[in-house]
Amino acid sequence: MTTRPQFCLASAVFRIYACGLGVMTWAVAFNEDRSLAFLIARSGEGAFVANMMLVCGLIGLVDVVLNDLLLFPFRLECTRTHRHFGFSALAFCYVCEAFLAALTVRSFWMAAFNLWNALSVVAFSLIDAHQRSKESTCLRACN
Image (cartoon, rainbow, N blue to C red):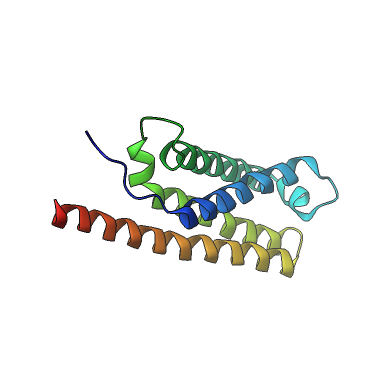
């Protein structure tokens, strides 16, 4: 019988926050015509980046639901193992949004907001990867 690795509530909460923010950014960009995100999404590049952000956010939310909530008897190991690639893609989307904010709508604060989000996603991705590495090393050494 295989056991599930230890559940980390802080990791799950931040992943829900980061991925949910990506999904909500897409929702604002395509539904709120008074926002700067809407102005960015009107361009072809902005729409592509927003859609890419939606996909990354949804994959991350599926990862949390399948791998962290104890509702399902199985785990989707590929999303857990390669989680850092999803975070990298989400951070890349935020950096692209920052450039688009600076170049298309000329909003320094929108660019700063997106850079802040990118840095927080990257920082947490490194912490999460380090924690999973320690967990994996401990499992191999202890078993």
